[in-house]
Length: 264
Ligand code: KIV
Ligand code: NA
Image (cartoon, rainbow, N blue to C red; front, top):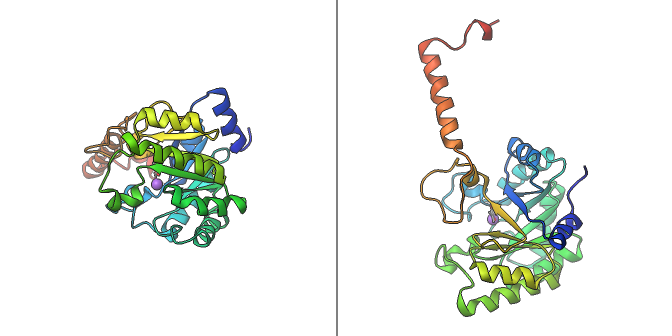
C-alpha cells in the first residue's frame, strides 16, 4: 500500500480508529516499526538525549538531526516521517522557521515537521502552512522550554486548561495538520481532542487522544532507570543486548567464536 498521508490520519480520527506513533532515528528501527504497522515515525529532538547522549533536548542541532531524518526517510516506504525542529531553529521568526523546515524537507526528506509552543507560535504555523509544509504543533509540556516551565511538570491543570484549549484551536485555525499533547490531564486532552477536527497525539495525556506516541527506547526498554509515569515498556531491549554482548565476549575469550563454520 502507498504512503500514509494527512487524509488517512484525518479519516482515522473520523472513524474513531486510534493509532500509534513512535520515534525512530535510524534505518533499522524505521523498517521494523513500519513493518509493525506504525503509520507515523517521528525523528524527535529527543535524539538529543536518546542518541547523542546530552542531558536534555536543548543541545541537539539541525545539523545533527538532519542525517537521522535522512536515514529514517530513506528507510520508510509507507510511514509518514515527521522531523522535529530543534530548540532555537524556529522560535526566532516565521522566516527562520520556514528556512529550517525547508532544510528538513529538502535535505532530510521529511514529509512534515513538528514545533513546540503555545499561541505565540501561530505565526510560524501560518507561515509553514502557507508554504505547503505540513506542521504538527506540540502543546502542553514542551521540553525545549523546560527551564522557563520550571522542569518536567504537567501543564493545563485547573484554570490553565483554557490556555491550552485556546492554543489548540488557534493552531488548527492556523493550518496545523495535527497536535501533539504532552503531560496534560487526561480530561483536558480529551476535551482538546473533541474541540478540534485535526488528530491529536498524546504522550502522558491519557487515553482520550486520537493517537499516542512514545520514544522507542522507552517503549522497548532500552533505556533503564527511572522512567516517566507515562511510559509502558513492551520489551527488555537492554537485557537482550546485554546478554548478547556478554555471550559474544565470553565466546571470544573462551576461543569458541569464531568456530570452523565462520572461518574461510
Ligand atoms: O522528541 C520527541 O521524541 C517528542 C515526543 C516523544 C513527543 O517530541
Ligand atoms: Na521533541
